[in-house]
Image (cartoon, rainbow, N blue to C red; front, side, top):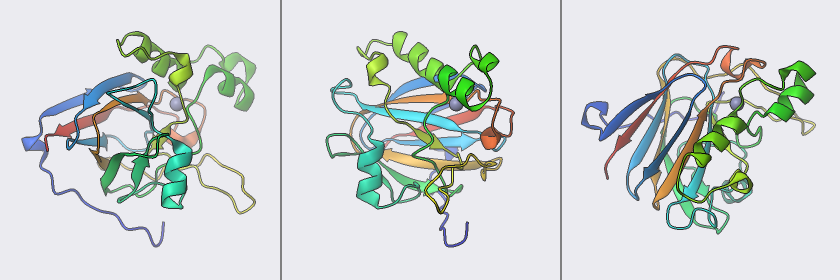
Length: 217
Ligand SMILES: [Zn+2]
């Protein structure tokens, strides 16, 4: 991780608007108003938080774009200063602090299908991030459907690009107490799957809780 700058937050959790622990393997959905800041705290280390963002004003039209974000930064990894872009070319959030230093934009969310292809046929019924996303949007009133599940961010996940252009799922580089913090640049819906994956080392084969902390502007 040489050359990466880690940036501490100046915000005090005791002055937060909301604090909520998301249990291992569970989905979480909330609204974040423009100017509010969200911290995702890796409580026990080595966890992956699969995350999607939607415009609150028009959730089925404007959403986080992995391609737009990679193009705007000229970088496939996310860290402090990264603007998370929408498919309409607007900045949705800006990463304002990061003590982990690497977050994946390419690995996608685990799913019944990818679990079978990557690991074994009998892995199909295992709980996955895609199922978490679908459950959360079905339980919400935003009009979101299966077609609104786009390429997601994997906060804290280490998916290095190899020199020949491949991807590998590596042991996480996050640790207990590491966090990433982002400020909303528009009103957004945040959808997180606290990854239940048991088959690859991105969460050390052991899903653990994360804490969500929100501050007002
Ligand atoms: Zn997952």
